[in-house]
Length: 229
Image (tube, rainbow, N blue to C red; front, side):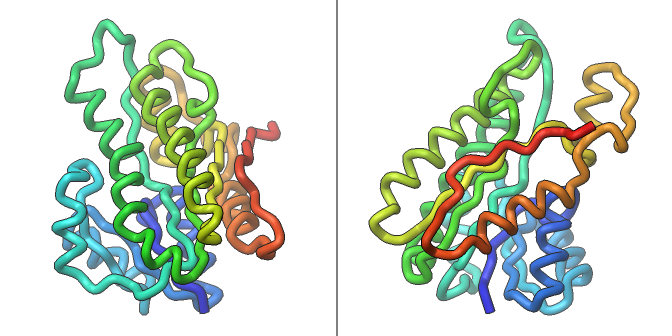
């Protein structure tokens, strides 16, 4: 039975990944921003354990996890949580920049650092759910794209550093996916949102599971998932 630590399990892609891993009997540690959210996740995924920490405040993650029971080994660390706020560079405030960089980049770096000992024990796998914005930045997307470009750099560096320890690292770059985040993006763009136009979260979840289930003789470094419609 494998052990997985998952951020973003409350909705969208993360929820589908958690559901599939839970259904096959794997051990789950689900990251929650507060005790209330942790209770919701525990009720939704019976038998799963929760870890409480605010990804928007990465400086406090070490303290938060030091007061909780962590797994002795981690077979996969799945960074799926993320936030987005669009706007032109001329309008974005430091608060907007800092929030997206904290949740989308600094928190994954810190959580990875804190769990690296367990990942090395199990020769585990770190998956960063990035974005098409992590490869190309468009107008209005500067802060979010910067956080995701940084996430690619984090993954590439980590892969080189931990290869000798047997830790695999994968970046997944989904295109627009039918999630609550995508609905928010459409509101910010002033567009109507039709979920059927975009990638189903289950398709991205299948890509993530393909990567972590791949036999040890191979590793998926980077994979892009694009709408087929």
